[in-house]
Image (cartoon, rainbow, N blue to C red; front, side, top):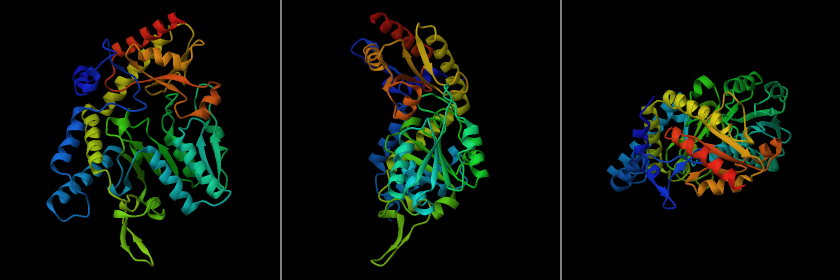
Length: 405
């Protein structure tokens, strides 16, 4: 599908040796991905050669930096197939994107007693942001239940709607279970009730192609650092009809047209939601990352990661007392597991001493953990640069830890 060794050569950190003994096996990609050299080089070049504040300056460097920043916006637009670049808002990440919608949408369209529908598998960012609104405005969260295998109950979802439902906010892929939700159906059902839908794409965007027009979602959020780009940059896609009606998230800087002590008029989209100096260096890095995965091909990445995930699950299930959470089919490259009564923190700590990086804990999904009746898991999450040998190292490492107990 692609030359995996050539790809690995683009990521210098994968050549590290930990504890002066073990080659790094990086399996914490759901938390953040590593960065290819081209992303870091592009950002370094802009800092050294084009650094100037965007949008406001008439001098050459400012014009050039502005052109790069807006070209990055267009790259994002093409990547998610938005209809217009004015529908692409740069944020600090998925969390800020969701908070922006929760705050601005609720200010414009929600009052006491209104409801938002979320799911039982949401990341905290898609729960707490709505709870903050709930405390301020008296709205209520309704929760889509899940099966024991971690699949949304669509029939129960249909029954949650009533005249007070104002918005649906749901993850595309669970960061714990790897469940790939049928977001197109989730959006369709919401629209049948005249309700907009926000999709958290933090865990889906790095792994397969995104088409927001085909999905027909009203909002879509993702983070740069989870798709081989820099930290501190993210995207909110929003349909113009909603973004136009929503008030700004923050005030100051480039989100204004005119200011007096009597009133302020706000800028056009998307700048109305981009107060202050944007991270124009990070937007260049994000665009380079999106171009990088596009050159490899999202279909190729999806096919390869699906094969690697299936191989990992099949090998791990040969370990005595292994439990893997989530659906057996239609899952993304996330494997949350426990072995017998070995505490997930002990497992993760000992794997680390073998050079294997996994995530431990509740993965910012405490309600989901309580639903599954556990405190936490170990989580191995795969990316386009992981190999069969990485999986073998993980399996051998788990077996080695099991022997210690």
